[in-house]
Image (cartoon, rainbow, N blue to C red; front, top):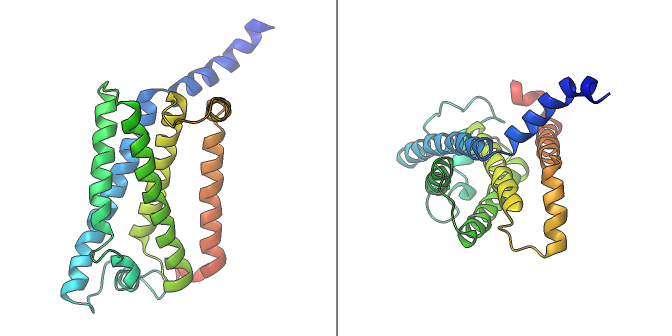
Length: 213
């Protein structure tokens, strides 16, 4: 019976081992951060274009719902007095540095990874606040902003997965064991996938066919 099951279990075991490897974790983090950095760069360029000419038409001004210009001209887009995209350029550059160094074999101290988790959690909350404002207050969607939200979610998920696995979050022993069992079973992947589906559903329920008009 064991021999008959081995062809089915071995690929699954290899896939699980790959997903929990440093190469997969930090490779995924690097890829996601590069996407976010690219989107932040485009948003920064567009913010400068809007600062020079508020009536400028941007490449992603498609309709009344999908409009980077509408979002970019809102006060929420420059909450700290400068374009939010500048923060993305800084934050994602740091994440890319951590990912590349980790892929190269560098092991950062526990306190450093915990600090990275705290700072990036703040960034995630900020990204979702902007998403909520875009959806419910501004009434327009910016494709590049949505891409930042997506990539920020993926970076946060991979960073959290690694920090839980390595015990970097200073959790109580019982909470650490539960969290480790949760990520070891790949439940975090299911949660993230379900969460992204919910976000897509919210956008479609709010704007429907207008998104594609």
